[in-house]
Image (cartoon, rainbow over all chains, first blue to last red; front, top):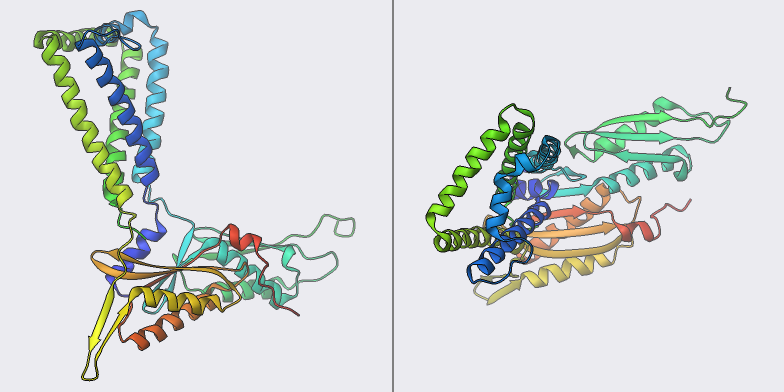
Length: 193
Length: 195
């Protein structure tokens, strides 16, 4: 895909816009601002304060180190810093959604990881004869994990299964590219010990 | 597909994070550093003195004005993020020749695609919208196939339909195809090959 507009679309559709986080932060800030403004205006027009008058609040702030134990400041500081780190992570991390781009000529194609997972599992089931319910596939950003639980006593060719999965995943031309891992899990029975 | 200004979202989050981290560091300094409490009292006392010096009326109304300006900026940013979700209006394109003029609306394109997709059994639902990115219109085809359907097959099918439509209407559509899994796909029958 060479089209710049479509490239923008794909980037936007595979990364979180962070709109929800931004709105939550903005609404909280607005509430704080509105409350402070209301208290100040009530004080200015000579009405009783809702919770605390602005002058008293300022006095309390100045006297805080003597009124409170240092522990309160330490705990408060840690809490503020943790919330700050959380918001910083939201601001700076790419926020990848669980989707992949499929290289598809001139069209932009984006596919949910869940679709890839179920399709790989179905393909493996069709080609190997192992029941669909005995195959579990997980698709992450850079890897595809396949777990096969064949029935007791049925031999499976692990290399063949691996080849089948790899072939199918490669045919999707996912970007970012994924690596496949296959695990054959034998039920823990007397015979297998 | 929307035109939310993501950089702005992240910038606001970043500013808030810096303020929170600075406040946290300040509180820790006051609690831990020797003399931190005294510094706090003297600095905040100075701030209080400055406010008192301004006079009750001007300090109060000044603070309210500053809050209102901040609030307006926040509301503008937040509403612009939400408004970015608005879809572009469906447009029409025409071509004229000696025989006459043909006008194809995006609405027709979307209906034609939708009908063609509805005929396929493995596709549970399809939604077609027109969006605008960087002032260019993009056709967004969102399909939810049955579970276990190969995304390759779905992409191939939608691609062919879009190409056919482009040939029919004579305009090259810029198409974005998204293939979704969802509750609907989980609840419907799987697309299992009958053996």
